[in-house]
Length: 579
Image (cartoon, rainbow, N blue to C red; front, top):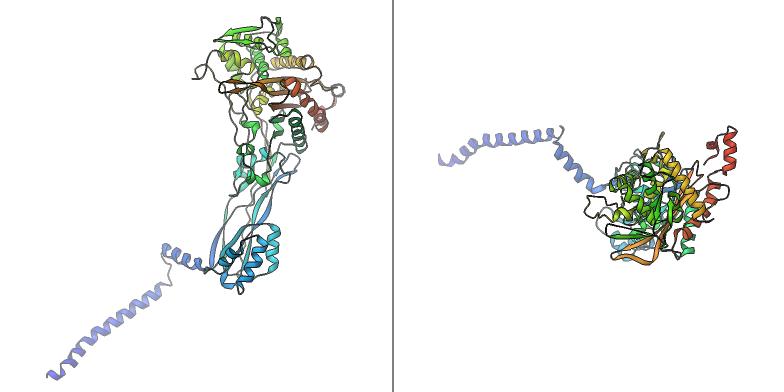
């Protein structure tokens, strides 16, 4: 009986074993069947990632960046190509020879290139900044395993022209400064992702190309070139440290030129060691405007009724208030003086007398109306608001009421003071300065429309101030700013250079603002030179305006006064022959 015990045990356990095997078989069959159903999304994503990591990589591609043009569709910023070169090491049969040839073309280190080619990875990047010519030479080698991917690169065909207006695109394909920075979102378009195979025989999938919008500027390339050439020559002639020339249409606020010296080449922005060169001094180069402010002081006084055109004051050569004494530039008393003579003789005492008569509330509210101490809101990256302390500010004191009237203790940008004067040229209506003219997005065209910043003075006051500026140009500057055949309204500025201890001796910042024709302005110009060898603005900056205006009237087709008036009298349209 005991001899049959193992057989009995086996027979008893066999059904259990069979049942277990059947259960395992059923489970395996169910598992196999489950693969035919949709997997958990997380599992699917993981498996696809594992699969793709072996023979695919994701390439993030920036959209083709929109171009930038001047007002006549001359290219200011366009796209060129550079190449990204990589290699699949497992497909290279002669790594040493391949390394030598590739390194020689792309200017790479041979040993480093060899190490990359012999690495145990599916694909390795050799260089991300290969020029078009180098990329062509690599392609002509026709090496198995080498991949060449085109990448967009920003190119500025005008070189340094308008560089601080246009800005530049950095290595991260992001726009910096100027138009490139301000309109980066419109120019850049949307970034794309493309899956690329590490297997050289795979054909990449086609994908729809996204593209940024093109932008047409108000800048005129010819006028910009004229302004930059004149500025560079004037800086050299006067031995100035730096300078600006701005040209605007006062009726619309369109900037026709914005020149700054020194400048830079945006094609080689990475070589610039002084970051201030990348910035636009026309919108962030603060300076004390000096006697330019006398014009705004008179405009506010006339507009607010504090003075009339035929009013006079007694000039004793000095005025005291707020613990300071203000004197005229020539240290002389001028006796009974009218308002126009203040501009003709640039009398600090006259401007200070008028601001004292108005009082701080009237005076500073008037300056605010002209935009002093506020950014203009121009569509360029990096604008500063200027500096204007008013009663209630921690840094305000009573002496500023006097000194601000003739441009000391207040700081403006070139564009800010130009915009204020443009209101005078435009019958008292202050226009929003801008450089954007049109946006081209495929078949869609979006054009800018002029907008206003306010009306600081009435048209009657604007005509009165213009009349005074015409007299100041003719009598105060001799023939330095005259233009035969045209009536010019202008004024010069001479400002001391502030330091932490007061003002720097023996040097100045000179400026001139003028517009023409005075009775129907088509263009207004601002000129600034820092530390020239000639101290006074009338002597250093006014002749620059004269030389510039002689060529501007030709470029902009502005007829002489008599021709224009005869044309109007005959029923002609002056606008038809304007720029």
